[in-house]
Image 1 (cartoon, rainbow over the protein chains, first blue to last red):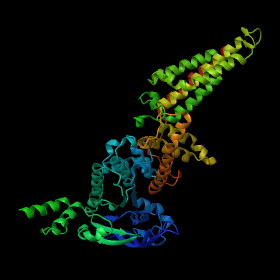
Image 2 (image 1 turned 90 degrees about the vertical axis):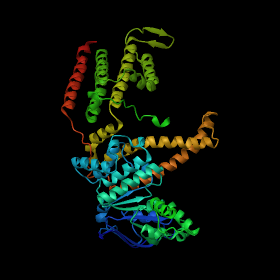
Image 3 (image 1 turned 180 degrees about the horizontal axis):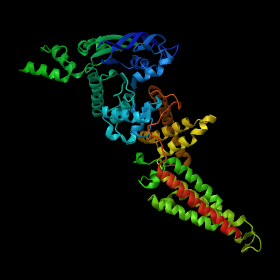
Image 4 (image 1 turned 45 degrees about the horizontal axis):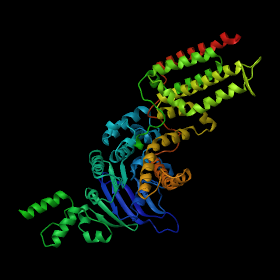
Length: 278
Length: 271
């Protein structure tokens, strides 16, 4: 599967003429079915870039295409927004309706889908996001992680090809974050939805197929999680951490132990340690 | 807990009245209000009150809730009664004459009618809000006003605003609670001092609340755009409102009852 889902070609964007470029010449692409994580310190332009993928922001110069449709093409605006679903940081600020299932139906109502079909599609979306049993509750009665999954269900009800998560787990507690990530991984693996996640959490990025690192509007590193996290010093220079497992392995290597330089998950780290102790 | 407060005065239940289509309930409530003004005779008002009591019974709403809804407007009721009592002058001799105060039999009659009418009015409209959740009420209003959209009345926008307001009330209450605690932690005196001081102490609560509300609005608008929101045109709804046989039956029963009550006018015409 190497069909291109999203493509940014030399994209530049700034919020006002007297401000520096928030995104400064980014060229990247995401293939269909891929799970891509975008990392970067605060203010590196990663969220700004994310907002280009469904035409919330239009590039100042360069082009962004979604399945070969340009986001600058107003005629396809709603096709693009339907293809690329977006989930934001604060779950409270993206839920519109007073009942879970009505909120999940919001996008479909906007698209003018007939009521009977809305019903089947929201049931399906709520099942996929694991919130079906909460469908008749008021959103403010749910936990942060549940609310964020309601937001995800509201987006996947549109049957998008791609999901863009803009720090969608940043405001959640560890358990909520774990559940949301599990949902996202499931959507990616079982349903083949392309995922682009903008995140601060290295453990989340470690689960991706590919990692992009941004710094002051540029993509500065790119590769598989192993390739990226191996460069611990480089990441520290960019004010980024590495997963704790990588950090530990790195420290042990520095102390002269024979640890691999590419373990990024706790499991890999544990296995390497076990081998060392054996 | 401040976040447990309920919105409006919805009293959940599963009675026939609860299950009626909100549009029908709104229309029948309007009909009832008109009836109260048409049946301007003691017999008619008594029957209207009895009718309402039956409806409360059917909806299994405790009657003491009526008292709760009447409480805030008690001064208005008293004011109306007193005003009518003293200022309606009838024919013939006054019943009571004490200085410049003259009370006529006519005045007492009017005062009682007006009082009963306002009480029925409030109790009747409360029945609507007790048995209809704010969401279906909004829905009903939107559908009823739909024909006016052709006259460029922003019906969909109004309904959307009401929905979002309902959605955000609990969120903002929670936030107010948080801000108040934060300010108290910094030594703000919110519950003591003169009225003026207490009002002043509200400022550092309201400002952050408003700023955050605007930020929320901004983010919500973006999230709505991401979900293809483009106004009311071409929109479908998950929940269709459909008049069922029960709705029509309720309409027939209520209209017959209204007509019966209104006909008392003919009986009392001589009085």
